[in-house]
Length: 318
Ligand code: PSU
Ligand code: MN
Image (cartoon, rainbow, N blue to C red; front, side):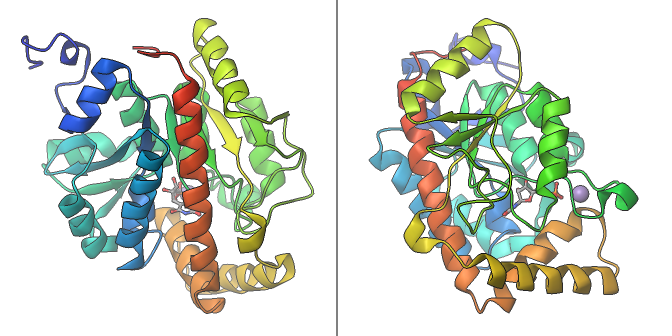
């Protein structure tokens, strides 16, 4: 049951624990940035995953916002993890369940541990009243989706949950064109931060245009406020290109991705295993260079997300 002594928590789910720091920030209307945990448990190897998660939190703090890393621990939804909890998640890695929207209730009901994807992190962020979320890449429409039907639940979540997701665009393990079409159909705008083209994660550009280019965190925050005021209840993709000095050559990445896709198909990798499999193979095939780029782009996204959160008014949307 919600605690009566704290009027703020009355509006929150009885299954959700905010860390003391996150709770204080939300009550006081300080900027908060949500962070996901699948990138920790399934998206990067140990110990780089833990180092990155802690660095990302430090970056958010450096920008004057409070980080709220989201996960499910012992059946409790968490917004705000301790360094020890991040270390435990990172060490367990893929042994921890990967939780998207459909998995959350099962993990909570069984008292389990799980890492939240973009979709599940958005859900928990919205429950907590957090409007901005930083990650590396979102899930999307996979190449070959016409046959496989493989469309990440992240896209459907963006269509119905009012949280802005700052990412480095769409990773080219996915079909960028179909991902953009899907987002358009479901009413999700793709904003390019200081760019007119959709970034492709490791590279700053792609052949596709974003819907809107916005050049400041304040401009992005203004649109988010209007979106809330209009009651649209939609998310937003804020695509932030990887810093130039960390970008990878497109041809090299395409080669690694093609090979990883071939291996996935030969080994019959399916469903929620595909994305982690491709991420790990691409990283191995580029000799870890893509992992270094991945870490830098997440830090860059954390910075922008914190800047956007700072531009939102106090007690945004709760
Ligand atoms: N893309 C990345 N790194 C990641 C992910 C995607 O570059 O770690 C993770 C995110 O948590 C995302 C999830 O929400 O993979 C998507 O998985 P799926 O394709 O199974 O929906
Ligand atoms: Mn999928």
